[in-house]
Length: 327
Image (cartoon, rainbow, N blue to C red; front, top):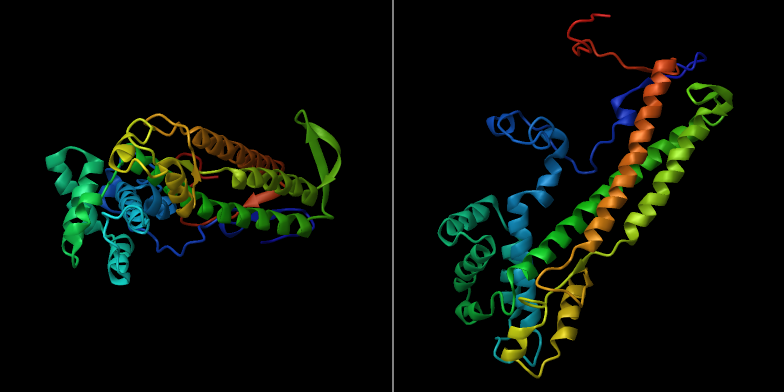
């Protein structure tokens, strides 16, 4: 960062472009990247590669595997479900390892199964049957994989967990951006300049105060984002526990389902049809829209400060700003 009395400030990538909190190596250009349909994981893969662990198809498979196994372990610990074998510590660890050690080879195996089933969630179930059948007495657990579940039970929980995990990372990134802006607002607290209204010069302000505006706005929206509840359901084909009640009529499945949803860090939605309605997702995405709009305002203001000569961009000798204008 360079500052002098002429108020020409070098805007460097290190100052204003936030880098992910994850330590990620620079991604080499490859053929898949060049043939990607979306620029998100094509042209901009270097900046989005850390999102693959949340939003790729293999990530969705892993979250589905997690949901199926967590549900199986949860049911095994409920004493009134006496037909489900009690799991030893070693078996539980082996089941957890299926989640923790989930690999791209596992994802490929699931896709191979799906070539036959033509059903993505059923392929997860068959994949787990193969894995669990290799465990000591694992064959006794196989009938209880996917017990009482419709595909949406697995899917809605998986999507909720992947969003929850990704947003936790994103909040860290937002907070680091806020911290950077706060530091700059303190640094520039006494640097006066003409403010602008209707595109014209107005009364004085300070650069620090203008940046503090964005610190406050972002803080308010991050607080709202963090209050959103990630809702999910585990109540069967049409949301009424029909299969559950036929198999075990004396169990309070409403309470048991809520306990499970809470145990994996989500909020239970007790009233649904076959699908969880995803109202909370709309709330989440609208919150992100507001945050992105604030960041857009910040970018526009910095663009304006560059055009006014308050900031200047760092020139890199190897980069080209125009294909026709050398100046």
